[in-house]
Image (cartoon, rainbow, N blue to C red):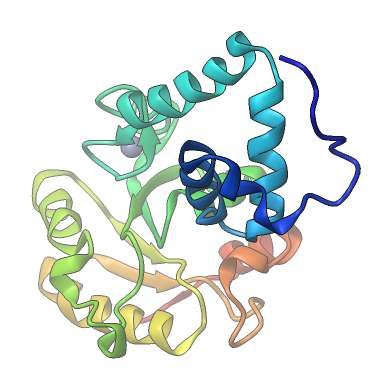
Length: 214
Ligand SMILES: [Zn+2]
């Protein structure tokens, strides 16, 4: 394809008027986090000008991610198999389960290398104002695990935000009947901070200094 636009130059805002197909692509890209319509136009033009093979490789990669990756049947981590690599690792301590909001926190806690147990991904925190109730999270799945496996301690590693605290308190109440030790990671995590933005050293310390809530 002839190069018809210099990508280093500002992309004219009305570039999508050239073609409804291009307009659709720009609209879809602009929905991605952190991208406005201007950047989306630049990316769309770049794709249009790259080789067919290169552009289709990206399309196929997006398709593969959607088709192959799903939640681990046990912990809710992301995996391409039935169970994730942590749940299938024979060296992990299966009596310890750390409850996190999302798979991103697993990656961060794994980097600290202080935790050798298993995880349980809730899929968010309770948020009454946003209509997120217990049934929207993987709480029943956690209870099932407590029923089915020999678990001695559940460590709550949720963000010290209002919603994170609400969720921790709810879980402490709900897990009482299972006779399992429940602890929370220490408040080395700054109050109000999203756990995603806490540095690894602080997070490692918070895990080591966790306190029992019984
Ligand atoms: Zn798993």
